[in-house]
Image 1 (cartoon, one colour):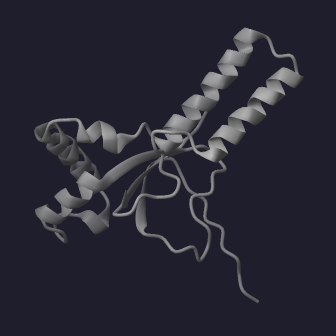
Image 2 (image 1 turned 45 degrees about the horizontal axis):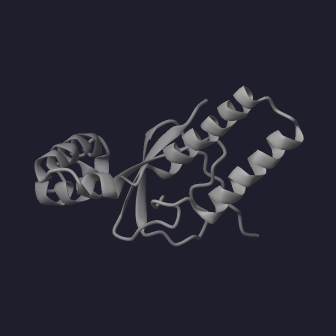
Image 3 (image 1 turned 180 degrees about the horizontal axis):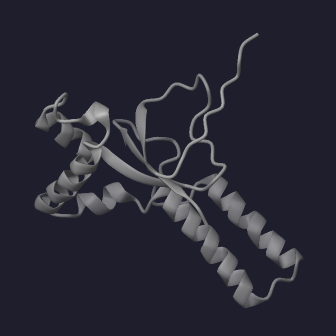
Length: 149
């Protein structure tokens, strides 16, 4: 399965950000999958593999409650993780040290959230207002725009 990874950085939580409880959409998806495997009389072993696959996709796409995990870590470890993120950020021209100071890069790197999207996922719609920046770390993104007549 091919996925690409996107970093989000935002001061406001994104509506698609995972919280500690599943979203109504995720719950509906699980219900639909359960109904499908029941209707098709899928054997238990295969049923479990299907469930594991969708849970994997959900966790990869929406995270593991990263803010909660990071908040429980010592500040030194949080800073070390941020420095690792900072080195990766600097590969993006906008975040290059020639143009940005260390304090700015450190602040941004502390806010990064890793996301994985499956092929065909819509990340943003044309003209949708955003309060975050997405940086593609691996994979590719296709852009579609509507040409006005």
